[in-house]
Amino acid sequence: MTAAGHLTLLITSGSGPAECQQAVAGVLNAMRHEAEFFAVDLDASGSPTKHGFKSAVVLLGGADAKIFANRWRGTIRWRAKSNLRPQHKRANWFVGVFDLAAPALASDRFHERDVKFETFRAGGPGGQHQNTTDSAVRAVHGPTGLAVVAREERSQHRNKSLALARLRQLLAARIAADEVAQKAARNQLHHTLERGNPVRCFKGHDFREEQGG
Image 1 (cartoon, helix red, strand yellow):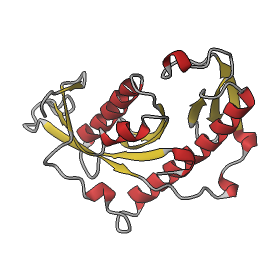
Image 2 (cartoon, helix red, strand yellow):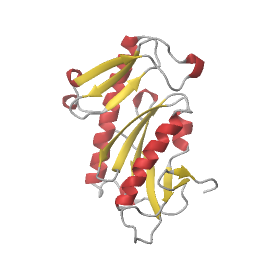
Image 3 (spheres, helix red, strand yellow):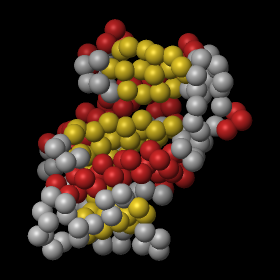
Image 4 (cartoon, rainbow, N blue to C red):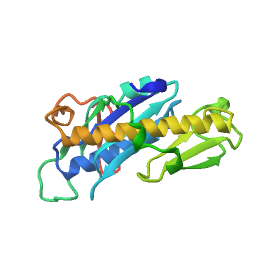
């Protein structure tokens, strides 16, 4: 859990092969799609590889953030024949979704002058309560390319403040995730990925969810 009522999740391929990096990308896309049906704001970042992501960080906010996170924590199985190694017999690939405790970001790592803002008419989760004025704000951090959206307030100024706080959290989480990957001896998240008892299962290269696991 981070400040301001947000949750931070780490999606990791662990020490798995490139197919698991594809699975991380698939999980991230599935989360984004599912968030559209929840009252959840989702901002994400990842370090891209040739095939997907070694890991990705997801920042969740909104009324249903806890429910949404509970649906994803644990091991995710993706069942698909490898399109990278067609002769490979393995067809089950696993990634993990864990809580990530992001530390406070040092003041010298984040400057508002590096952030560009865009305003637009809000859309997405919220239904009849969704803001309909052009006060939603998208904030992009120039040095890293990280981007977040704040749209829950009717005030553009308030959404700008929320976007800055969210961007700071996402950047801190991204740094924490990189440290986890680089210093596995200190944090075993990437290496405690369980291959059995997945919480959710997907199949095929269109990443369709399997019913009943």
